Image 1 (spheres, rainbow, N blue to C red):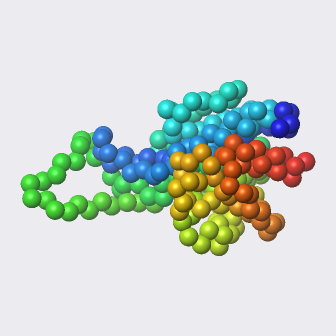
Image 2 (cartoon, rainbow, N blue to C red):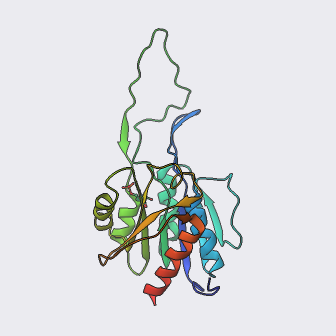
Image 3 (spheres, rainbow, N blue to C red):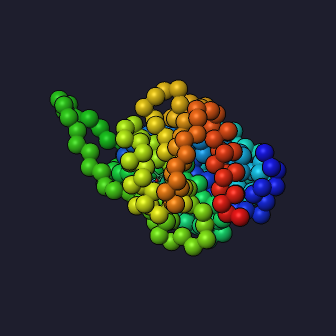
Amino acid sequence: LTPQLLKDQVVVVTAGGTTEPLDPVRFIGNRSSGKMGYAVAQVAAMLGAKVILISTRPELAVPAQLERVIYVQTAAELQGAVQAVYDQANIVVMAAAVADFKPVQYAPQKIKKQVNQTDFQLNLTKNPDILAALGQQKTTQFLVGFAAETNDLLSNAQVKLAAKQVDLLVANDVSQTDRGFNADDNEVTLLWADGTTEKLPLTTKVTIATQILTRIAQVQK
Ligand code: C5P
């Protein structure tokens, strides 16, 4: 680890899964633990960067030496937080699992089941694709997306790399329980905008974060 590798760089990291409330007691969420994003934030700070962590996980221990931590819950809040700091960012790592859809309506009072009710229709509406919007607005930022897939990992990731105009897409297979979601380890493939791909072997999320950030520092030079 080169302690000053990211000195003076502002690194924005999003971590965790967003939740979309249905009513005061219920939400739609996903299984993202936030561990990958926290590992990126931790390592970026160890490399001397000014790290702004945007997190949905207030229960996780905050890594040392971060510049700022902003807690959010919904995709809309996450988008507001990342947009507010995008201009000052050098590297943006979107490790958060953002909900693709949210309830059309929020019920201000708890939704009650009716006597004899056997089913329930829930209408959802599309959330903005935050990463794609960042890709369109990109000036000098180095933009990193994550893609969690259960099948056709590389072809799905290739499509996202192009569609979202990111500089690096980190693809991970979440179909196995010893890696990916909630695990401390991960096995990812890096897809760079120039078409090169690299498979990193199964290792800890902190090691993966180190490899990703070291490579980004190299290409930014
Ligand atoms: O399309 P998909 O959700 O698989 O793409 C994953 C990447 O896109 C992640 O980096 C995630 O943070 C980002 N994303 C986003 N806004 C969404 C959905 C995903 O920024 N609404």
